[in-house]
Image (cartoon, rainbow, N blue to C red; front, side):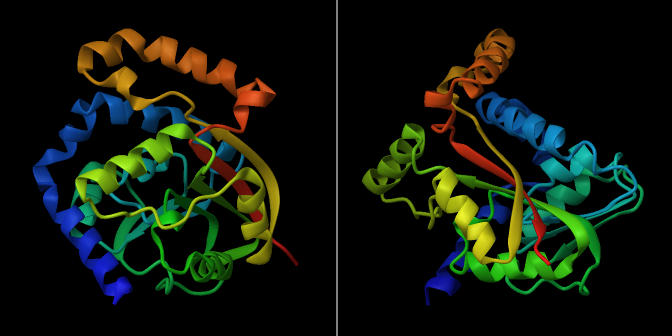
Length: 251
């Protein structure tokens, strides 16, 4: 029953966005600041693996990561459970060659074993009833020696709990079902048959800094500068909202 409720939630979320509304993401400057910070970290982590690769983006949503990697890969595929999101992903990536979009369940990916060199699962596992099943599927579709980049929310970040409290007070659906610490995230990958190659955190600052386009324009450089500095402070780095892990299938 909970699975059905979750599926319906994401179906409705996707249908909220008009196909012509890709620019809405660009106008949502608070979201853009955080997304760009995370995207920069993701791209930097993958930079030496992208060229000539076949990439799968699991839970691709509106195609933000596909848009940012589509010209660096040999081929790319985005899969998501929501048709509403996939319509936007198609529009955002319409100029890319060798890129396709498919509807699918992260727990039952419609691809052959060893089909991809790289798999992205950014902000996906926390939304799933059975994240371990999804990780097994990611491992299955990765070729031997391939890399998966997984990003999950940190339970140690205060803004995550503030957002959860606001959802409870306002009676909103809780779409984050799981939270992690850097240690439990690493352990989760290992239990799914992965070796952790690299891990880091990012997104330390609250999104309110980018609440308007003016603020985002004014704070963009400051925001990026502070993020970089905070990531190098051991006592603070573990408090990032996002935990990024680069993993490879264990032999």
